[in-house]
Image (cartoon, rainbow, N blue to C red; front, side, top):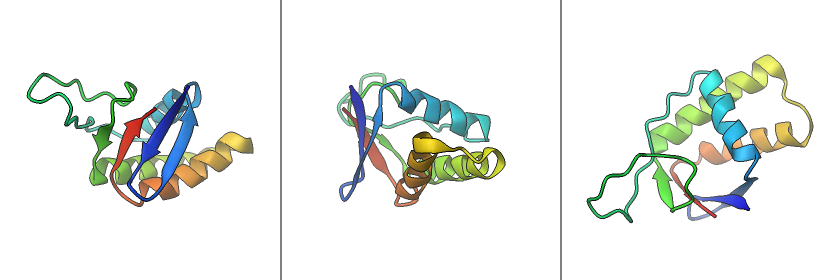
Length: 103
């Protein structure tokens, strides 16, 4: 199963094992998640998670902050291989602004 992240112009996919690793890597390098927004909960409580694939929205600021943290990770660890290439491409995707998390 994949995580399909879409900003309306571009879709970026992470597999179910890699997406949590990306989130953790960003946290390790200073990203402080502000929580996602959900339009589908219509007034019901929403926990702001990044993993449920319910088309929850990551804000512009949160996406930019995630990209900044991943850049720090990239610069200090020189992430290699296919995962590293995907992290680099995802940083660029995040710099385009808000996106939704679906599957």
